[in-house]
Image (cartoon, rainbow, N blue to C red):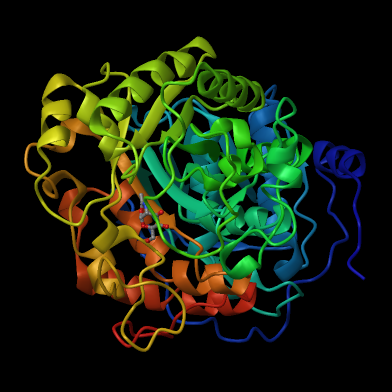
Length: 531
Ligand code: NGO
């Protein structure tokens, strides 16, 4: 059993400057895994200035000191302590005070390098301690994720490790290239539970991902409670739904709020998606009145796409859509609401335009900013609407026109960033319609040079979608996401100039001991020198 030290006792002892009776540092330290440099971080920091003389040793007396008066900073400090305590066995009290006589990890708000902005941070490591400075709690959190990677990999162990906890000395100044760095999880093809989603959030947050897009509805299942249309979940998300009839389930509103809160605590914003006017068979097979002929089609558990369409001329369709958007907006604190819009092959072009033009104002009416798959740019929406590119080519006239007008674009090219694509022909899970995507392919592209006419200024960010036709468990999710997700995360955060496969593959290989300790089921790509 580890010893417990109450905050008040530690505060009192620290204030008196008295020595603490704490677990002693291990006598014979085991070697750490590999030698870490200050820049051995994914995503690679914008600037790192190593100073070999100023390494810090995290020890039993180290305290985590947070900006006084900031509950949010204190929470980041508590999360950091919770991350570092199991493996170190140190008490790491979190003290919201101005100074302590003890070695410390200080989380300071303000007084940063001017460039760090809203999500960046500056991290200084000296012999006396580590100081992370940021303008926001999100920046402090990002800094703590860097610190975590700068510690020996054993820091991820769930029980006490007898090693020396050295942090390489020097200064890092770091901030993101793009404001939007996302992953997407498909809950419709196979449902994934709150525990699975939050476990994924934990992994994402280590790589400075700041949005999680949830694909909540599709032909095979409806996965979010909507009170005004209750059968959407009891039937549309009920037994027998999902690909092959396996993978039923749905998020109640309480579940969804729990996911939102869990993600928010890790500085990740949830983007909910209701896919329409196609990909709607789960809703239309549940409510016959959502079909033009009033006849409910059979539920579908196959993987076909492009056959369903809401009834565009029926006012009831818009009542339904408005109810769904209103209820979803009410439980979504984040700015975005994704309306899908992909593969509406069963909707005529004219109907598609009518539909999108009626639905976009509903999103604004409930205070949200609409995003949608790139097809929605066919209707030339207002410039606050965000397009998510999922094509495999390098030209798209609608998207280039939108970018020229001022619409922002999220880049998720299916042949580069789709985490559900197989790595190679031998991958058991996944699909291959867009490409085989090995790690080098996932890393080897530039979001600002992917689609002609859609340059740096038009890019809001990047996303790594994970569609779940073939994925059932968290193990499956992890196998497809790791190690490609960190590749996409680096494209979203790090500068274009820092892009370097040789550097990335070595840093990626050094993540493996961490994943093993976290029990992440990753694909051991032969392209990576795994440690
Ligand atoms: C496509 C399709 C999805 C599939 C996915 C599988 C988009 C935007 N629509 O991507 O329905 O699940 O491919 O890779």
